[in-house]
Amino acid sequence: MEKILVKPNGPLKGSVRISGAKNAALPILAASILGTEEIVLEDVPELKDVEIITEVLRGLGLKIKKDKNTLTIDPKGLNSYETDYELMSKMRASFLVMGPLLARLSKAYNSLPGGCNIGSRPIDLHLKGFSALGAKITMTHGEIKAEAEKLIGNRIYLDFPSVGATENIMMAAVLAEGETTLENCAMEPEIVDLANFLNKMGARVMGAGTSTIKIKGVEKLTGCNHQIIPDRIEAGTFMVASAITQGDIEIDNVITSHLKSVIAKLEECGVEIKTNGSKIRVIGRENLKPIAIKTLPHPGFPTDLQAQFMSLLTQVEGQSSIIETVFENRFMHADELIKMGASIKVIDREALITGKSKLYGSKVRATDLRAGAALILAALVSEGETEISDIYHIDRGYEKIEEKFRKLGAKIERIEKEN
Ligand code: EPU
Image (tube, rainbow, N blue to C red; front, top):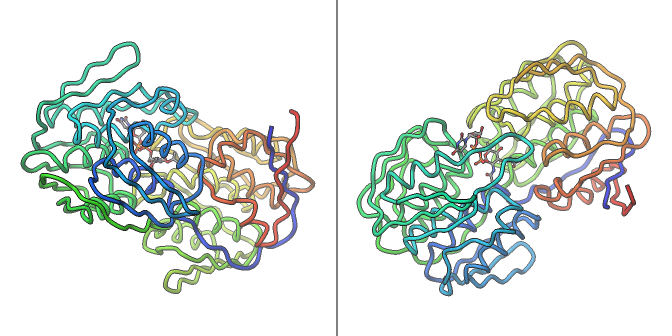
């Protein structure tokens, strides 16, 4: 089994280029089902999750050529509305093909995505949206079938601004007859990137990035060239890496307006941040101040950076708190950090972190993708060697992570090891 080994090596220094965003690439790849001509996607990160969705699309008949971070997609061969069960069970985001399939073929058969480490993650809001557009949904033995003679635009209110539901319904609605209004929808930058991609192919999506999206149905979408936006969560992870090691890192290829809440929290802590166009320089300081964080849908503080900030807060004198409001079970990294010497108390959805703790290199497990990143960050300032297992979670979402950290001066390597 592969593991990551990390030894402390002082402050990180230098510059790092941020990859394209996983959570923009996945829905955009799913949306390529809607196209009828060649699509070229640039800055697609080389990640396990991207490989899985590419396989899902190939299984549906799309032809995809890969040249490093550029994917060329020919959607003309689309010939199936059924998603492979195995691939579906490997990644929840495969469910994002449901909306586009329903729009293109009036049918989509998919297996029910299971729960996952961070919570039960239902799909009721996605299905509610498809029904409102006129689809008939049936669920039997873990299989979901959505069928519609014709999709017709409607007014849809989401009970919670779910990222996936907003994307899936938006993709279903682009070819529907008439106008769809999606209210209380998610406002994440990845939603805007998806809308921009759809519009380049001929869709008429307005208001993405606000809480109301209007979609005027069109007859068909064509093809386009599109560059995926930078990954704000990867950027945030390296920002914390600089802060926790008292380093000085320049992070390149970022859209700073996507990182407002993250910049605000680091500055509140006492970290120095300088923005300059598409670059952010993060200068770590001694004697950081404790802070309170509450995760929220965008533009609030992202749940996907909560674990990384928890590692940082173990190194801050005094008591900090983190309230997780987006997922019900996203504190599993706390136990791993406690093993390393952190003082963290979790009560329901709140974690109280008391610092500054001396951390010791330990054998720990990446319980999910962001938890894995948090453990690497903690390991950078722990005495001795940290051995992280279950790193396939990390590979789902961070491109060339050891290479990037090594370039900044970290001692990090991947090894093959039994148990
Ligand atoms: N929810 C429902 N019903 C639904 C859909 C969602 O109750 O039909 C609930 C979920 O259970 C959860 C909350 O709504 O408690 C938020 O879920 P959301 O649908 O917004 O999340 P998602 O689309 O499944 C995406 C990202 C996640 C990220 C969340 C929140 C992708 C592929 N995944 O998931 O990314 O945490 O939005 O920002 O875009 C990660 O990258 O590590 C990751 C988990």
